[in-house]
Length: 181
Image 1 (spheres, rainbow, N blue to C red):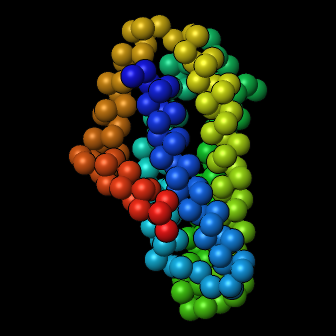
Image 2: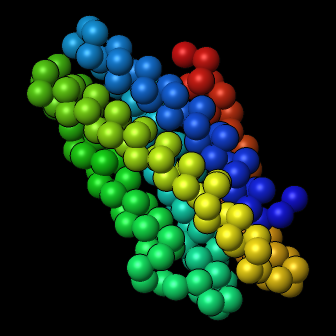
């Protein structure tokens, strides 16, 4: 498996939780009530699996090696991806900030969670599409076999350092559980 295939596979797992998040946002809009426990799990997944693990692989490894091979850091696809990662973090922060009031039944906090979940889903689906269909094929064209090997080793180190042994599998299980709810 190549590094970009690994990242695409992670996108499939992320998509499971995005679909669950979209369903939860729709349920909130229909009922005015939020499943706080489920949203906590989604937030944990997005912050730790999608951001600390997946985005770290892109930001700390893929993008840097692509730049070494001539991809521009500014004004190109890497800059767009970085900006979208940051925008996603802002949406997640807004959800986290609204959770305490939502736990107490505050309608505006519950509405904020729904709106930010939908905005996050929309952002990530577009983001994933750009990465899978534009950025990763571009990376595959410019990266050497040595780059690919270096990246796979670095990916393993990120998983061990950033989220810990066995935690990747834990988040896969969370994603599949959320997908079924």
